[in-house]
Length: 243
Image 1 (cartoon, rainbow, N blue to C red):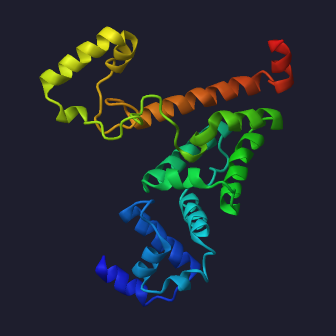
Image 2 (cartoon, helix red, strand yellow):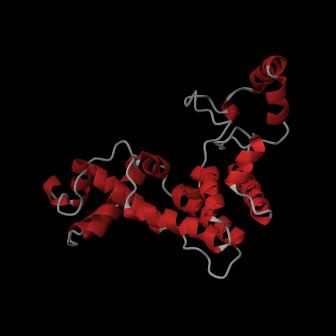
Image 3 (cartoon, helix red, strand yellow):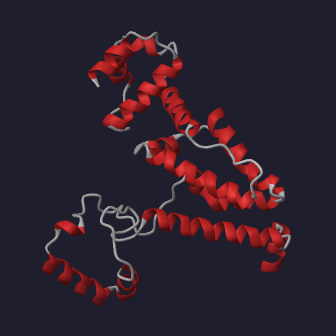
């Protein structure tokens, strides 16, 4: 790492180098610990030198998100819309998984940058090119939500207790007692939670396969979109049908 930094410090500073260094630093120290001063130290320059290439920290974060988006594969040419969308989403998921902080960075962007808008426009275009109406595509984009970026808010994520002890670190007899207590009070949750063997590293829920669950939900959405397109769905008809 030291040798890499020494080499980098001899390289003229430009916007691309600043952004790449910021991404690498965030990978190392985390999104919250990233600062202009710390980035300047890593690059061997004074903080003011960074402002020639990014307006401020928000501009830096915008650029970092652009770097992440640049790692997402473009739409596959001559592919069925469903295949193209699926491959693009999974490529986005891989791109974000390479950087643990990427989801937080994407979600923190309140203003849509050209890089974000370019990606959204390209993503929307896959549906329109596949014969979807603008009306249906509008609702499809709402439905697909964060999956466009390769992530989603998981129902079983232990967000309420980030310090929760992994099951593998709890003695077997204690786990059995906890499960028995849970089953008595929450029988339905326990029934589905214990229906699969669990992976302790999962963020979806102890024992769930994150990638499988993500693709399962994605495929359900794509199948549903396909059925709606096939029957010429419109929001006007849907609203009339609800009256």
